[in-house]
Amino acid sequence: TLFRSYLSPRSYIYGGATGSGGILFDWFARTILRIEPAEAVSRFGEGALRETSVLFLPYLNGARTPLNDPSATGLVTGIRSSTESDDLYIALLESLAFDLAMMASRVDGEIRPARPLRVTGGGARNAALLRTIAETLRRDLEVLPPEMGSAAGAALLAFAAATGRPVEEVAKAVPIASRIAHAGDRADYLAEKMGLFVRTYQANKALFAEMR
Image 1 (cartoon, rainbow, N blue to C red):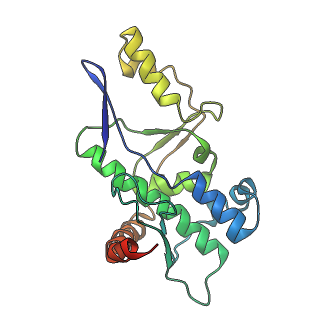
Image 2 (cartoon, one colour; image 1 turned 120 degrees about the vertical axis):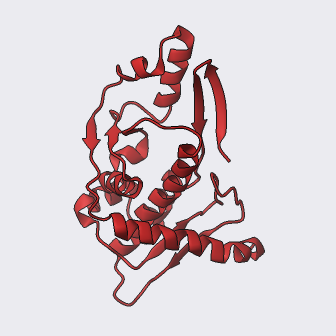
Image 3 (cartoon, rainbow, N blue to C red; image 1 turned 90 degrees about the horizontal axis):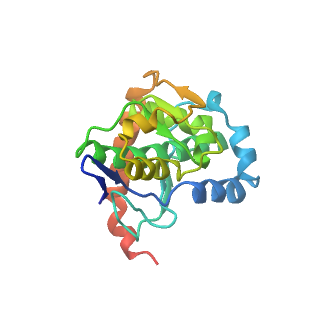
């Protein structure tokens, strides 16, 4: 489920939460690749993206919004003898984008969010992840400066509420470090893959509940 917090007569915070992000990256880099997370980001750039048969469910500590399934676990399928570490990493990026897309779909069903989307936090330093998110959501992204952490959005909204200024006006004062325009060249592949992602979770949901 989404949360909704009141700010002012015309402003609310809509959102959700994911437990798949930094924890997943750290686990994959240190456990599977045997390298530090920062090294994994520099090793796999945007140019490494390609289609892969590997599919990843990122729920190492359960699934939060919108599935709300604490029994969900991580899962990897589609591995073949030709599978490389790049395929695993790409599938991991895709899983994070698909998880975010499910949450974004719920938000879109209740409000009309601004376009493009603004991103911040540790994941905003990962060009390959940002590209995958942009193509999955079919939305342009505006990336905030790295010194503006994940709480930047909440701080901006609090400032707007405290001063009575419109959120749109306050948002214009936020600096944009870079912009990512979705190209649409991988749209069909990612849409099909996301469908498999959802079906894979649904097919294994009962199994997750039995696992300890």
